[in-house]
Image (cartoon, rainbow, N blue to C red):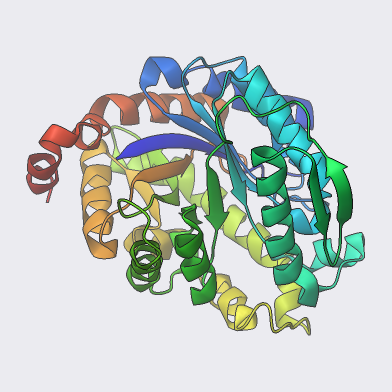
Length: 363
């Protein structure tokens, strides 16, 4: 198993400026090589404290590429619904070059109705825009003199520059929340899967659908699954809870507020059951997230047990993407947490030769 740092800004200007947030985040990125975190990931969202500080993952990851020589840089994820394919392909090629071929590209459909309204894009075009955008970007990165007639974007004889440093292109990931079709589609295409235990749901079943689709399509291996978790590690469980509890509860409240349109009238066939998903998230708390294994908070021993339990529960996953400075959690606390996690938790799971015995030793 690999462990990476995920940055999901969830702050308002009166809590923390953009300058402060990104200075703190990049400081944490600078510790990746020393501490063994293998990737850095950031979201794309707009207009709301929930994610709104990160309208362009490429910008942050470009800065991050200069703070680590080894970590992979992952968009988690870019949104074709709000971006022209030609622009995305060019930016991807540019960052792949700047990072010496360390970029991996995650794509998502977006799910917050307020973003669609402000961009003037219909929720019911979400899946079509996503599928068209991913395919157009793929061809622009893999081929030259590309011509495509799309429903939303069309172009003739385009060679995107700069050409990707990785051949034939950076690896692709697909973000999925709870719609089974999204998990199956990622597997069929041979792309990695990004998922979020935070929303609950039948994660083991959904990952199983992904892996079955991967194998049925004839791809070698079983695919790659990246799951996102809030994480805070301390020598004392009481201290860990005291520091992380309110920021995580505030994060959950901010998410529900950003997605509140789903429970007040928004609907789309592209998002079946999202009203129920957001209503369910409204009932989530720090305690429920820790209990179900979606948040890893406590001592190193507590977290080792939580990782082993969840890994077994869902049938395994390859990468844990850790939110370590969520909401207003102080950067000093986040640094202490990731240092302790690196020293006392990661060795139990990162050595594949010892993986079986390590899992057995912590449960």
